[in-house]
Length: 170
Image (cartoon, helix red, strand yellow):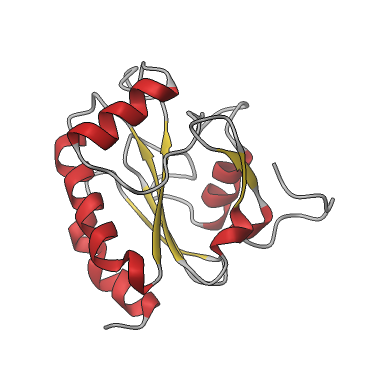
């Protein structure tokens, strides 16, 4: 949901979301950070390639200003059926993920999380705004503006050059 203002959100920093433990997280805490926002799933064919690469990117660039925000989603093939505790256990144990994992959300449809409505309206996809599958990625600059959107099949490693430009290490 957008913060107190009734205006349209101007950046990703205008949202409050729930973390995987049900706590409110004001995304304004990420002001000044480059964000890679990803809808994740534990049982997807892309899981075993995406999670390790996301973890590696996070380890390499978290101290330089990168944050990866993972939003579990069960809208594609029911590939994220677990509850938040199971999802965190999976990501943190199997893939050593240290980046923030948020509450499971819908990314499409009438119940889509407001933050995802904003992301999609900021950067539509090749065939419309809808998220097509797990591991769609949005790259957000330090000011909270969406600068790019990547297809589920785009590997996180291939986004590294774009991340480096935004964090200033290119």
